[in-house]
Image (cartoon, rainbow, N blue to C red; front, side, top):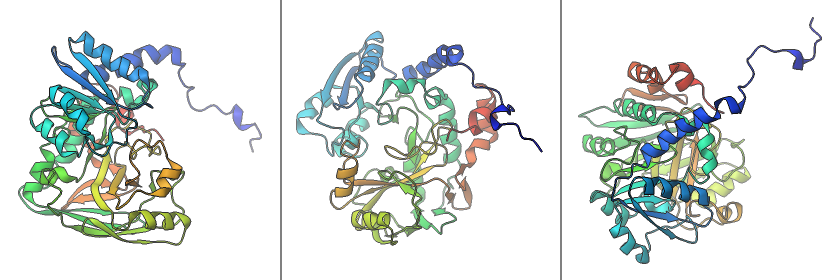
Length: 387
């Protein structure tokens, strides 16, 4: 029987000293940075920011833009929780060809959508609020591989037929979103579902750090016409939600009648809080999916985990939630939105398996593995996740 102190056992290699790798790794991240912020000579760049954004972030983006021959202007709101484009911002937006934004409304505001349809390029930086993030594994994971993973997942959606997107898990979730062939084509036509993670395509909308989403369902499926109802329903038993320090101890059921929350089951304090917030709320993101293998799986702040197969379900609330206002007064999103989180879901599109108990099936697609081999060891790149 061994009596040696555990500290004397060494069976794994020590971490490589940061000074040995940090320069190489930093330049890997910089390549992703410059390719995402794909400024063109003559671009008119507008930064939509807030006071809590690290000023080094705006300096980095502005410096890169200047080096490319683009001009930069900045408009700062009082917070990132902007729910609709202010009238006073519209004149500046109309002049811009490229927008970098922290504002919550960037994805869904009809005015912003209309500008993108005219060719304006957008980068949302919810996950790039601190320049030090350039030194993280997710910042240097190749955006080309993020694109491969999204394309491989998109290819699993049945083509030319109606199908259900079906979410289940071991807690009893049973939730379906119905797709028509037209909805499939609309959703998967967006630039990120086509694997385009850089803002080099007219009309694009991308996230940096890559990649928050794309969503397995959202209103892109109906061309962002919020008046068009989508057939969905069932129950979700989320493990967690943004704004709660730890996953839920209780099995909490969130029931949907169509797109709207009809009931929340549970007796815990967390269940009571969710019930107060969610009843009557509308699903706007039906399975926002992570696609970056180096994103921390159990970091769900500020809007869900970006690890492969991790899901968040975004729900817009009937009224501002006092719990959110008390708990997260400086949250990047307004207190009229809740992100429910599931890390172990199984998801099928028709008969096609997208996610198996939290594992994104595309990680083992031959085309993805072959692409990863160009950047290093495919298993280390794709399956050595970050907790």
